[in-house]
Length: 139
Image (cartoon, rainbow, N blue to C red; front, side):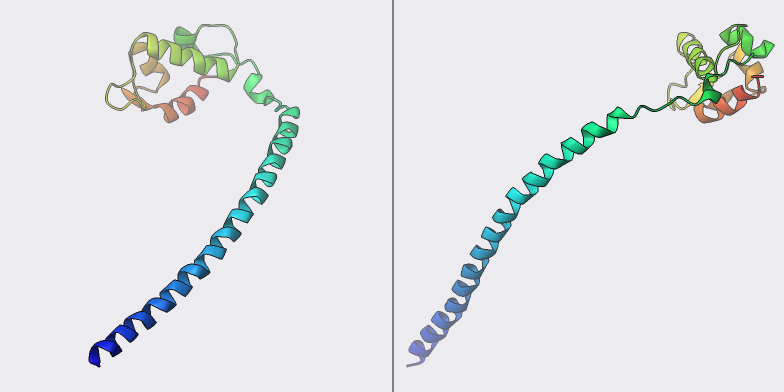
């Protein structure tokens, strides 16, 4: 008799579990129904992206203005007036040509004699500090 009660308890315990799994299946179907709706919204997004490139960015006139380098900076980039962006490019060309970038920390620049005059006597300068120091040599 005791075993019959245990068996009845086991079957009673199994029945609610079966109901839970049956309840999960319709939820999965609802999730699958949501996926096609997501595809429709994804199809709408590329149309919005195509409109964005139509408006071009205008370059900032301050960056494009030709500036005269000082004599210390002219030893590195040349004497002709040029925009700030071109000055930065020429300094990086000089740094890479002479292998002045630090081997361990690539953000640091080891100054040679010409760059030390531009960097205010510092032997090592970070690439972010470099632009600040260079701007003081442009008029």
